[in-house]
Image 1 (tube, rainbow, N blue to C red):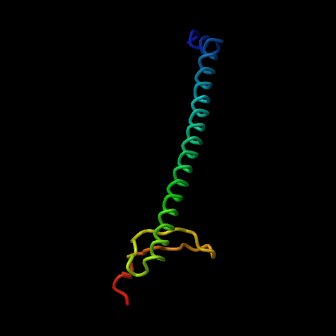
Image 2: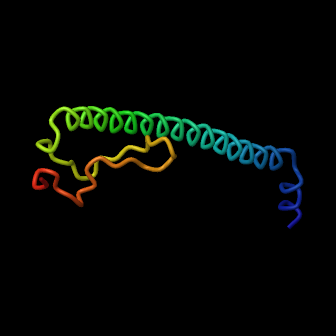
Image 3: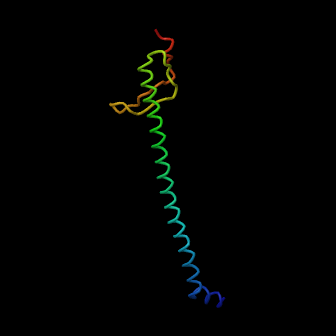
Length: 101
């Protein structure tokens, strides 16, 4: 029992514990940096997807303006671009303009 007490109160044991704590702290720092990097990459990809959808919707809208009702709606093509802050939807899938007079 005395040897156990001597070990638990020794500088060597203290150094082991400090090393474990330091390793845990470094892992937390690495994890936080990784999370920030992933969030940044994810946000960048999201902006690129939104830009892609926006540009396709604009191009499709131009084609609809030129071709009129002969250009069908595209289901699922929507862009949050309206002036009043609501989502503008191109081709919600609820109507088929090619069959309208």
